[in-house]
Image (cartoon, rainbow, N blue to C red; front, side):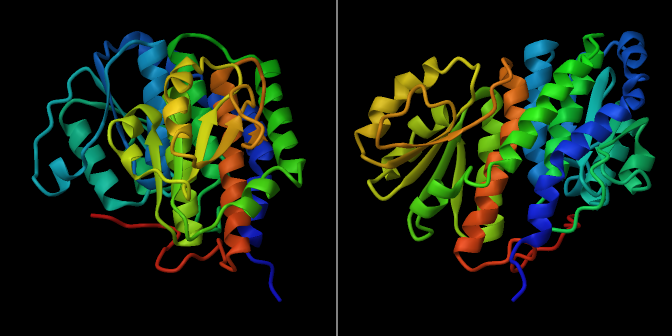
Length: 347
């Protein structure tokens, strides 16, 4: 009998190798400091779909917190459906896509350039139409990805986003820092029991919610998406603050609620909400640190590099491994989810 999710597992396990390859080819970022120095960018627009859109949220947080510029996530239909002529002078446009083939991304990118925008594209295909459209292309260097659920390409998008912003700050990422990311990514991958207890506890018939905030929010969205893609169940991935503004009303004792609480991060915002959440008696799972967990709550220990942002890049592996093993538990093949293709061509 074939092993379910063999490709997805292999691709998750390649993540440290992808990180190393990005480090070995870091010269592709060398052009960026002069671009940022010689252009008076006043705002940033990021365009992406699906998994790459979750990486776009991560890049948005990086630029807003480190550079201080306003960052928007584009509405592609403003061009593809409504034919808007964009006015993008002094605007940096960053397109993120695993395949670089979706026609809506390409059409919007062309409109952004026609409107005066400067386009940087990050794709996993150097010969893709989106790469060809860009003023500058950053290769994700993830290698061929076969499983429909993107894993190593998402991790690559997070790391490349960090390197891009470091170039903007004219800060070189130390080899030692990247090696720490690689080492701890390997640690999460080689821990065969990393998600076992959580997978055993979660019932696919019950509500599943994944919460994060700040730099953990993109991973919350991506974690939820991975479960939806591979186990064919509806999962919410939300900001914990947004969750308290309405969705919490649906919380019951049957809900499986994951809280992304990275090591080395300020979790005071979680403390404000967790007592209200616990009053509904859901099954709570912590990803990252156990510092706020009670004895009856399951903890999946995450990385601890001393840097919240690095931990978020690494800990995306936890959500991917959970989705993989959860699908297997449910007798589903996460490599080929029903109704999905590897490349989604939206117009």
